[in-house]
Image 1 (cartoon, rainbow, N blue to C red):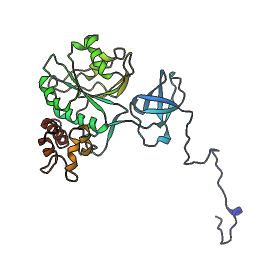
Image 2 (cartoon, rainbow, N blue to C red; image 1 turned 120 degrees about the horizontal axis):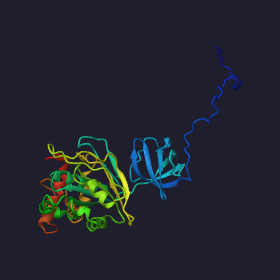
Image 3 (tube, rainbow, N blue to C red; image 1 turned 90 degrees about the vertical axis):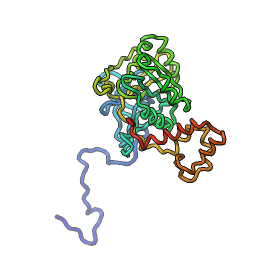
Length: 335
């Protein structure tokens, strides 16, 4: 082995040739200024189905995106073969800025956030009135997640032929959440489906709920040409079986609206939610927090909201609803 002394010359330095003849690595990433805009419809095992103009294209995530995830609802920049023909593959090279992000965690102690969908503006919380029984705690958690993400909530109550909706609706009346009540017979009626569709027109609505509540059945009635598999409720456990395995965005016929069907959830963790943001969904109560002590949880003896309500600035039921939602992080959904 040759050893160099103190007085070496650049000519003495041996440079190993690049046998592969490829270019050296660089941190400069391509800008892809000629990329086409697309809308992510579904993600399945690393493959993305993207709507590009009037056709669907199969794509994969480009390496330059690193660990940045791509989810249903994302608006992306895509390059490569955009013909949509069989056995072709394009590349998603950029994820555009998101207008909203709906997140959840496995439970309240799990710091890992899971992005459910991006760019939705309405969250439809689908709950059966019976078979399976409604779980108000899960509804509360979904409402908190919707308020935190800046989505407008919509309560969709199904199977009203099995149980009345009045008692459950009374619980959420102070929140002013809009609602739709359907029965299994209604979904076979085009007029009934149109009434639900009116709530979704010109909006991107994500459907969330337990397995077996009729979520996918409702989506099938709204988008009849794209039938998804449905299942039955287990007679022993009272829980539904997961028939929807991945989120899927579907266009509403004759409108500019979209519905996003998601797999049934057993839990909806709120570890990621800052309780201070929940008050934003209560504009009638928010001015009353100016007199609260620093870092007030709005559920403690010296909270200024008690006096605000006592002075007649807001209804007591609204303060109760706020505190019930804030307390959802301390309670399990089945409580």
